[in-house]
Length: 208
Image (cartoon, rainbow, N blue to C red; front, top):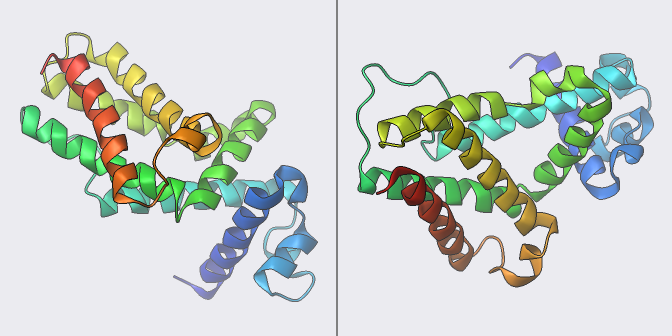
């Protein structure tokens, strides 16, 4: 990374923490300077407008999420060619990997997850943010491909449903009723429970 890239990463990570703590209204250049431990005016020197700051935050969220997905060997790029068929064992491994990532986003990555949802709401009024934040489009492509390889009867529709389910599961465990009833994030019980939920859906969609 260049010095400029490193500095922007530091500033956007501080901005993510601010958003997680206080929502989008907490995001100001001055507040980012303070959270990052930088002299006043540093953030505005790199990211002059609030729009530029928000776009940089959204890009940083997507970047760090992709790092997590890759760390657990979950697909993030174009499907392999030729694409191998997937069996029940493959689906179980996929469910376990997804559970690991979800649990990470609920525990050590909780601030990022809260900030991501805040930015998604912001994107309702700023459509230009959706293309940056939504690696969801790529996730849907991956899900359709994986379900097709596992024998799903309607992989395009079912892939979209699968992504929606996983995102809903994350949201429920973060701020919904699941936050009160599910095993604590970061625990083996949490990962086991998440894996069981994802595996149940994968097997239902593919008839495995």
